[in-house]
Amino acid sequence: MSEQGGLRIGVDVGGTKIAAGIVDGDGVIHRSARRSTPDAPDIPAAIAELVAEVADGETVAGVGIGAAGFISADRLTVLTAPNIDWNDATLGQDVARLLDVPVVVENDANAAAWGEYRFGAGRGTHHMLAVTVGTGVGGGLVVGGQLVRGAHGIAAEVGHVRFERNGLLCGCGLHGCLEQYASGTALVRRAQGRLTSADGGPVSGPEITRLVIAGDPEACDLLAEFGRDLGEGIATLVAVLDPEVVVIGGGVAEAGDLLLDPVREGLAASITGGTDRPGPRVVAAELGNEAGLVGASDLAGIPVGRPSDVHA
Ligand SMILES: [Zn+2]
Image (cartoon, rainbow, N blue to C red):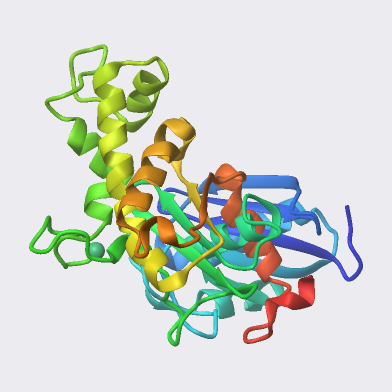
């Protein structure tokens, strides 16, 4: 399990839990642990404890942390976060001080995209767009084999491209963001009045997926409309980015082609150049909830600003 120079450990910090795991050079998790997310000031210590627990006395070479928030361009500071009371938190420095090892912090969706690029549905490509359909719509972008982070570290916020002018108010403060129409939360909202759960109440996301897989016609129609909207939103991104592959992840993607086929339809109907141009493949993510942890650990081996193709 031990690699030359020590273990590489990935950490995934979410609003409710923190997970840490030893990840090898093939993206396989060997030992992991998790705990609930404490208040922001206690997060560095919680991460250090989890890392020590999974390392179990072996030397740690580096720690990569995927965190839900805007991360500074130097990959050390959490500028702001949607679900944790974090502002200009020196997460990377704090964890590095506690563990005395190099630490890299990356946005969780970027880390997950990198995991899929290196070890999942994007492997073998050079231009990949990842779209994660969960509570919100997240994403990540790899161009020419490099994770695109933008000038300030906050690129690839794909859920906040405008889908509807003067549309629904988004958590980001703007109106009409794609996230308000094509997230798991939006799917549940769209189901209100159309689908009911077994107990007569509103349906949850997983229930909708179950109804779709069971062939419920209304649920299938709903998911198809939702998927076409998502595909239309993705077409906007494809017009700019021209990726080889679009990797769709998140809970809703568990419906597989029942979701992906409408996404492909929506994309084909809205892509610039129509059928006269080559377009991207649209595929399901492969690493599930582990993508962020795996991607973060891999990024711990890539110095900021250095081309990632040193891995190739
Ligand atoms: Zn928004």
